[in-house]
Amino acid sequence: MATKEMEVVKGLDLQRYMGRWYEIASFPSTFQPKNGVNTRATYTLRDDGTVNVLNETWSDGKRGYIEGTAYKADPSSDEAKLKVKFYVPPFLPIIPVTGDYWVLYIDDDYQYALIGQPSRRYLWVLCRQTQMDEEIYNQLVKKAEDVGYDVKKLHKTPQFDPPPEGDEAPNDTKGIWWIKSIFGK
Image (cartoon, rainbow, N blue to C red; front, side):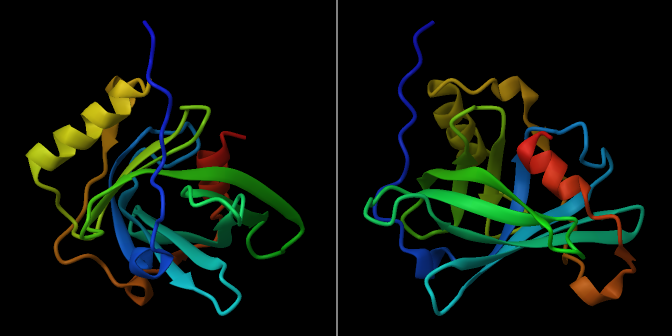
């Protein structure tokens, strides 16, 4: 079956993209806790044009998190192909681990987004709210399927209303699973 070439968003407004995004669904990773809930990402634009990335999830009542940096893979391109860099282990910045972060789709109001990678091994459905309209969700899944993703692997992420605040739970100091889940190491 021929798949369409993966197109990415052009002219992404990074300023508007900043803030918190809730993970509505993703491809599960063997390293990510199976019982992870309330998974989310918070992006903050830095003065140098790079983006601070904070990924958080809760499992067994503990908050796991890791911080990294995102930047345009090709500064001269208007395509939303970003690189995300984390340091492993997070509390001892030694080895930088870099992965692809391609914005495949975003709506005009920057309320929901579809994120993928050229390998098609990773896929995320993100939303500004903790819940997403089923019809919109299905449209995003269809977009992913059209460009060759095996959408049967999508797993919905439980999100609580209201979402937990970062300082309400004890931190999971291991935190390494984030790296492994994102880059499949």
